[in-house]
Image (cartoon, rainbow, N blue to C red; front, side):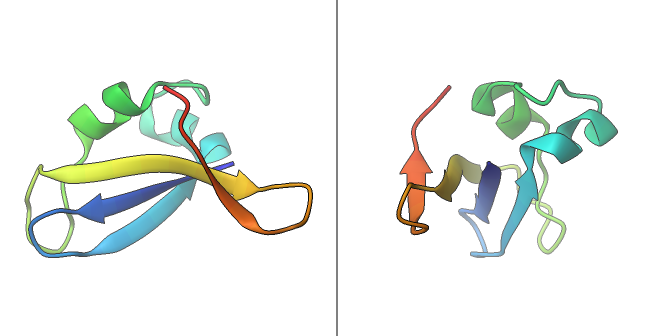
Length: 68
């Protein structure tokens, strides 16, 4: 499962896997609210970001997973 991150100010996009969260001091099952409060866009410095979890469904297609 991955977490997509989009800056609402400049549109910069990135993603991180849940397994990488401990490297940032968070549990791998941390809520998106907890993660979002810590994020700062590396392009423009804005703290206005949007996050969502996504992964692949049984057919191999990407699907958005609204889990908090």
